[in-house]
Length: 308
Image 1 (tube, rainbow, N blue to C red):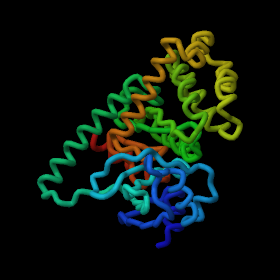
Image 2 (tube, rainbow, N blue to C red):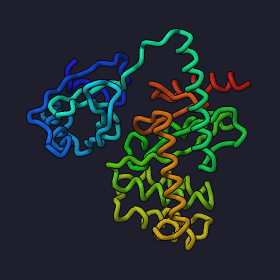
Image 3 (tube, rainbow, N blue to C red):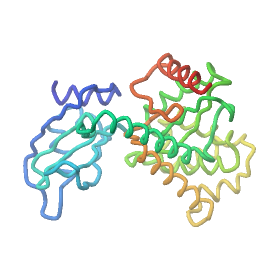
Image 4 (tube, rainbow, N blue to C red):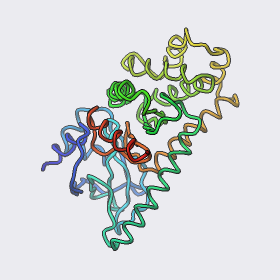
């Protein structure tokens, strides 16, 4: 499979079954002061035509890797995160369809690790969900936790799917929204702040902004998102002066608390291996591969049966 076809498939959100490793030689050595991320991106764009057709390509900072002889980083393409390894001299890069996997454990060790991982993930999601906006009955047997970004086009598409699930399971399902604004989306973070400031007073006000952001993505910018948010809240039953202070005054205690909440959300996402937005968890289990209402419905039915 060519590099172009793999990036195309990842960009469309189609899961790759095998953990295929692709080698891309870069052209020059790394800069003396460290790995030159922009040069690496330029080389990848040369090798992969799809990367030249989008402006939303970024590369995270590098850190030590568990694989000898490599540094690791994350390449983000239109909100989709792709694990990446680079030699310390910056001469070669490996794009991975998934992170390296330890395959040396016994069956018993695997089972113990899975149980511990499930417990830790459930605890992390419960901490992240506490106090966050919820749709649906509080005592619903199934909880769908969504890590999302208001500027992410995939998240906008997924919002209609979530709405349909809420209509189908009015008594069985509730949905918790967790902020995960991606760094390349310039207005996602201020939108997260504005919406969370609304949530401090009313979940309904939060969901008003949630729906408005996804309905009007093309009209929003970093410069106008707070002003537009105020107009979207025109009919909300909240104290608008309090909301403005929280959303606009970076020195206010409310604003700083909201920023801390968003940071905690993102840390929770990293701890449960969120690799892109939207990411969904049903009763603590990550949703893998499901993209249709029917696929989600099967998982919800199973979770509801297990909860009895």
